[in-house]
Image (tube, rainbow, N blue to C red; front, side, top):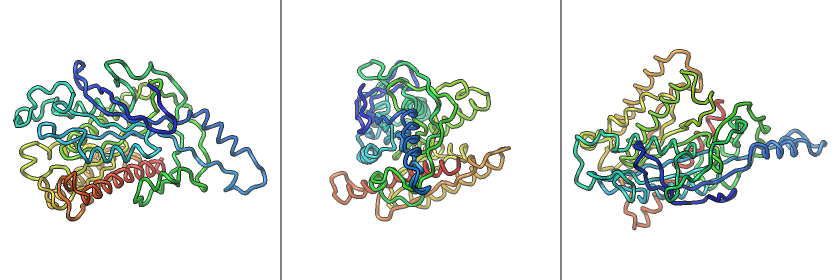
Length: 393
């Protein structure tokens, strides 16, 4: 599949699921950056030129490589949710515009669109006995997140999209220009995209000696961010937490990255209008899904919603967030030898006044404006967390 180094490519793809015989319909936008060898060469040429200037002019700015991935999860398929949801689509389009994202993906869960494995998930078939089955979404979401992070299992028309694994020198040490992104308040991701380099940024770092594997023709993803809307936020919480715990277990056993296997590093999670109200939690078990975030106290999490949400009152949201924060703090204290990078991070809760669960109707101009602002805020928050992770490291 041809990939442009300058503009993203949106393509109809199929993603793997938790079952080998089930594939999920999706969309994937890719952007390829220059290789690490080319980046090092450019940094050396800039740094070695012109000997009469001061340090600020002789220091090469870091290159911005598209090494972030974003995966979007839509509302419950049995209630009409799909990847075509206006909120998911708006965030997808906003992230595609930004040069820091190497891969932006959304997909139809089972029972939505042309995704397989949807038998028994028609509208009106929400039975409590089926809500915790694997096909409800958590394991499928983890499979898609892993595929987007590594390039494995993605196909077009039933054929593998990307080539066999290749090894290269690690690009984990490359800087992404956090000074250009700020790390503080970022009101618009589009504004951040207009300043891809920082004149006062630190010098371009040397490549690490670590080797990484990747799929030929696929961008090398350093961190993956997960964004879920409505029920998708509950599925995303469970999937992201499970992947982080699995990665920690691999590290503890001396496997995974040390053996060169593709890995998934979750950089953060955004829950848009999670259905955490009493009725929704009883019907969907959403509170139980959301509480899985307690097991990963270092994961940055943003919860954003309207104060007129029918499925989650402001009081219910604050109660849920406070409960998870208390459990995270306790889990953090129970860990031995935790590094500073793994410190406890409380969930952030942002409430927009006058907005409901759907952030307005799709055909309402006021609604489109608010959804656009939401998309900008989500992408800006992702960039902020990426910049902060560089500072910590």
